[in-house]
Image (cartoon, rainbow, N blue to C red; front, side, top):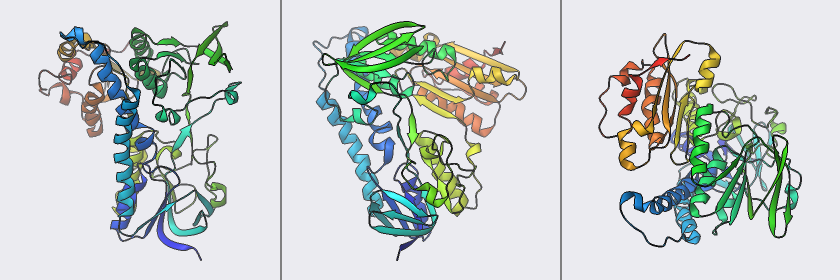
Length: 458
């Protein structure tokens, strides 16, 4: 006989544990299943560990710039074992907190093992079969493996496996010039590695505006990172104790040897081994579970949350998925995915804060728009901090005065972006923030100034 529950949650990423809390508080008996690490990607191999490492790299970078601020540090050494130990302590606190919270949750039973559907209402975990009228899938995603010749014959790193590294690579080759590749590239360059980034597209993070891509490339190259765009990788191989990457740029063949290889070319959902076909749950061609605007799968009684549904690839969107599901099930509040405004950060230094439409998307839409830009060299706080790289850009609908989107590349812009995002959610005209009196000296105080200098987008 199956073990019966009111709800089964597969995965303990950012959606699963808070949903278990809401469901059990509502009187439901809940089973939650984790086959690997409690807390999912964000806690173990994503946001928390990478930002801990980035913080160490930032401190090291600032120490190297000591003379710019009027002091000397002497000989600077980097202890990668200590850097990793700091990261591990931070991760362990979060990982253990998630597990302990679930195991101590009333009416919640934790199962460890690989979950597979046997029917639309039953899931097998090892030798046990669980049954419930409601099943929530929160299994996340993993690094994809590109089809480069020779990749099966060389050791390579992913965003997950690189977390175990406690030494400094002499020369880190990175395949992929988007968020993961850029963050690790700058991080390890600051730790002391030689770094080369190979990107297939004609510019880095090609879904951003060209001026953003160009500015980020300049930031990275100023730190000594070698960047190749329009790089068509033919194969990788081991030779003389090194990993050799053969590629071409605009038809010219090149070869680069490195000590280590990081593959950062994309991610795929962890849905291929769940037995979804037995439950009748539909997926798209990439394996993402198809869901409606309230995250219901194609089978009644099944929902998909987080990275595996293809509706967002961030911790904040995963947590919002939980909020949408809980609101609809428990609060009689019909929240929807389509209410969400696109927003994210790129955590290079300085960071890129993004919300809404890009300039390219606004131009493509054909609407009348206004644009405001300001270099960080004209932001007093940035000048005072000695961090003036980047610029801020905001797009406005010329007819209704609503903010269409913003790209803020500069010191503290990962926080400043929220002042614009909140106005967008309020559906208030840009004049609300343009007329606000912000505190001096801050980066945020230049947002009203930026909005007071709008020009037609031509």
